[in-house]
Amino acid sequence: MTSSDDSSRFRLLYDLGCAFAAHIELDELLPLIVTKGCQTFAAESVAILLLDPDTNELYFPYVAGAPAEVTARLANMRFPADRGIVGAVLKSGRAQRVDDAQTDPRFYPNVDRDTGLITRAMLTAPLTSRQGTIGAIQIVNRKDGGIFADEDLSLLEALAGNIAVAIENARLYARTRESEAHLKAQVGALRRDLAQRQGHPEIIGTTPAMAEVLRLMDTAAASPIAVLIEGETGTGKELVARGIHQASERADHAFVAVNCAALPENLLESQLFGHRRGAFTGATHDQRGLFQAAAGGTIFLDEIGDMPLPMQVKLLRVLQEGEVVPVGDTRPAKIDVRVISATNCDLAGAVAARAFRDDLYYRLAAFPIRLPPLRERRDDIPLLVTNLLTRSARRHKKQIPGVEPAALDRLGQFDWPGNVRELQNEIERAVALAPNEQPISLTHLSKRLDTSNALPAASAPPAAQTAPSGETTDTSAPRDGAPRSLRQARATFEARHIAEVLREQGGNVSRTAEALGLSRVMLQKKMKEYGLR
Image (cartoon, rainbow, N blue to C red; front, side):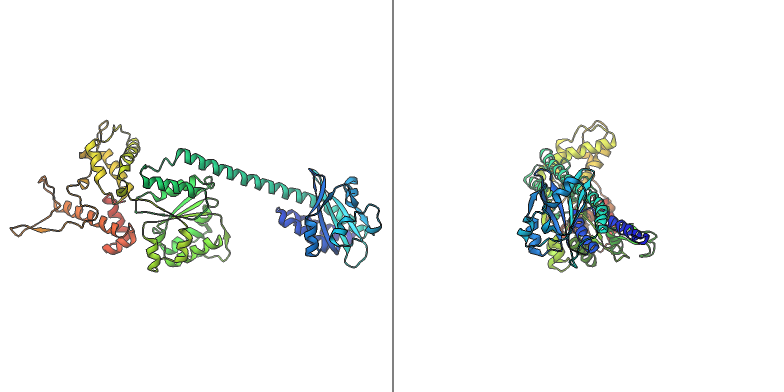
């Protein structure tokens, strides 16, 4: 063999070794080995035989070059590891060349008999790794009908070591992945069991409506199904989403919350899917999107009903394909993320009005969870007050012994258009006003909670009435005769009117702002001012 032949042989060994080492999935590695083997040795077929140490049998995990029916028979075939030429090779630990298998006394004819093949020339080499002998590789029959050369045997013997190491690494990788999947399943089951035992401590409520919410949360946590959380502003939709995530097998990974209504369309796409450098003015570097940031975990899309239609199309593609395309890029990136979405509007109604895509809705709303407004679960208000009072007092570094019965009664009678968030703001304000070591009393509560001045939830704002003298009076004035300034009267009316329109619009901030003739930012500012969020 010339030096040029040596160089070509070493180059071939190197290239094949690199190709085998680059594949750590057995389902990809074995087909590559036998396919490259057929090409390299100009052979009719190549077979990998692996050893089952428990039964001391050989089996064929993958065969190339043979007809489909033969491959199927070989896949179900096993034979003793000490039989045939391969048995002799495994026993000696050395590769062997056979020019005419039919006349070799070691030949095991059962394989040919069961498959209909005729084995003539063959090369066999043991596969030996750090764990010992794991099987053998056989090159069967030259395509031109001739015999294999000694150089072919040397090449196969040199390749066998790389093949054995590659197979062993792929096996270790497969076992590692199986162990990881098993541990994740166990951890997920333990978390769900713990959630069922401890409940969701952040979710306060014992009414039947909240018991149903908790039951649905546990079911959703045990499944990868898409969840749509429906409820008015302030009902705790993100809290429920976090509870589902924390009780699921994805709890060790990120929970990323996105308010789809808080960002303009062009910025929302960049935030969700990322962007490439130079994609738009100000894009000075590549930026990963929030879907990629939530890899392995959960992304929470709040106010999904306010997502613009063009973005809905792009989100649907992400859910269908399991991949995102950053702004300014053409190459998709695979993602593994669970999507939980939420809305404070009637999303089914938006679909009917063609304001929301029906195909996206059905994909997001596979498992809906409706959160009841606070006015539908008044029996939970004392529990919520106790919990919120404890937290607020801790933040204010005060000792507040509780809430006086009259104050608690007033809190229970109010309709809370801003729901739990509004109640939280009210308790925070009361704690700030109350002296240390004194309970919350009526004097510490907002005047708007006074049911003598507050309207029922379904009623309209108070209309001005004409007195006998012809003067206009405000029916919302305090009955105790205390003077009220024009500013106070206007603020009272404005707060009630905003709350009513919010209720009419199902808590949807964008539609409420449009109905009131305000910008979304201005409406949110007023909602915060009046404790409606």
